[in-house]
Length: 254
Image 1 (tube, rainbow, N blue to C red):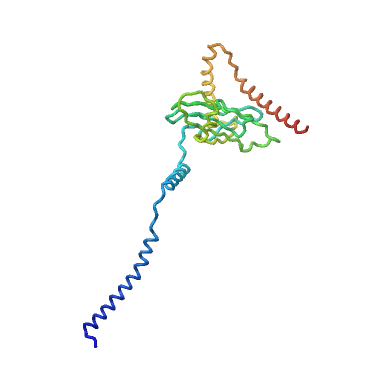
Image 2 (cartoon, helix red, strand yellow):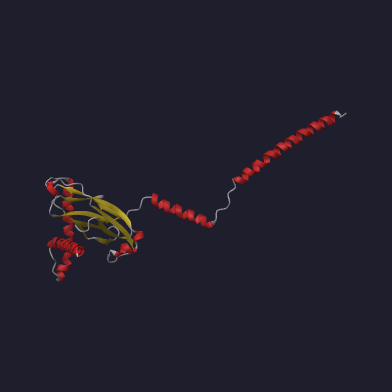
């Protein structure tokens, strides 16, 4: 017969064995759980790839810094005069601390051109560019529709003062910034408005600036062609374009 101490010892031993088995049974899942959440070290190459991806994402999300201030900011106003060549104007100012080249682009290069089509501005320098457009006569005297014509102004940071050439933008296309896409708005020349008055003032400033640039050349002797050059230039471009089109049609018929 077992003594009370032995019975107690046996009971106690049974309890210890039970708890040992219980804790041993729980230790395995706990160890497995810690092992499951252990993250292996990230290779340096993967870290660099992730950093590049974040940098690219940041460029997409963050607004592109502007180098130019435009006035008007997002529109080009033209007087609506069908059958005539009309003009608009826009002030372009370099607000950056570097030299900046700008360039115009249009969806209708056959009927529009800009003066100047591009230039290089020093920090703080501004210029009023003039935009010329031929307004087609509407069919059946219909009211003018909202024009689909658009202009785009692009900018490029350059090292310093230099001669402007359009190829600058082709050579560094990855560094070009689209400053603004300008919508065309027609104004009734017979109806006074603040936009029309502002356009007239800017055109007068642009003409005065052009005359100021001509004076040194006039003193030197070369003859300066007058304002008719603008219309003559457009007519020549138009005639060359039509002649080319007729030549292509004749070639196709042969």
